[in-house]
Length: 240
Image: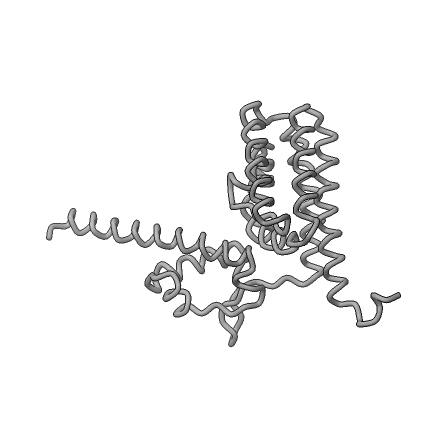
C-alpha cells in the first residue's frame, strides 16, 4: 500500500470515528437533558459502549466533549459523573441568563429578519403540538435551531452573546430548563410567554422584548426555587 492510500485510509477512519462520536454525543446529551441519566449519576464507559454499540475510542471522544460542555465531570477516586449543580449555582446561572438573554432579545428585535421571525413562529407551532402530545406535562426542545432560546441568541447577531449562551452555558442550561419544566402548568405558560416574546420582536419593540424575556426567565427561576424549597422543606410545614 502506497503512502497516499495509507493517508486516505487513516483520514477515512478518523472521519468515521468523529461521526460516531458526534452521534453518540447527541444521544448522551439528550439522555442527560431528559433525565434518563440523572445529575450525579456515574458514567460507565463499558455500559455506554454496549448501549450505543460503539468502540471505546469514539465514546471517550464524546465524553471529552461533554466534559467541555460541563455536562460530565471527573472526580479523583470517583470517576466520571453527570454534573450536579448546587441550588446556589443553579440560581446564579438563571440570574446570568436573565440579564444576558434579555439583552439578546433586545438585539434580536433590532436585527432579526422577517424570514427568521416567521421561521421562529413556525417553530413555536411545532412546540405547541409537542406539548399537546405530552398532555402539557413537559416542554422538550431539541438543541440548536430547534430551540427557541438558541434562535433568539443567534438572532441577536452578537458574537459574544452567541459564545456565552450558545456554547459555554448552553447544554447545562438545557438540562435544568427541561427537568424543572416538567409539571402540570409550566410548559403551557412557557409557550405562551415565548409567543409574547416573538410578538414583541416582530413589532420591533426592543424594550418590551427584553422585559418579556427577563420576566420569562425570572418566572422559570422562581419555578425552580419553589420546587427546591418544596424538596427541602421539613415535613409538616406544608400544613401551615
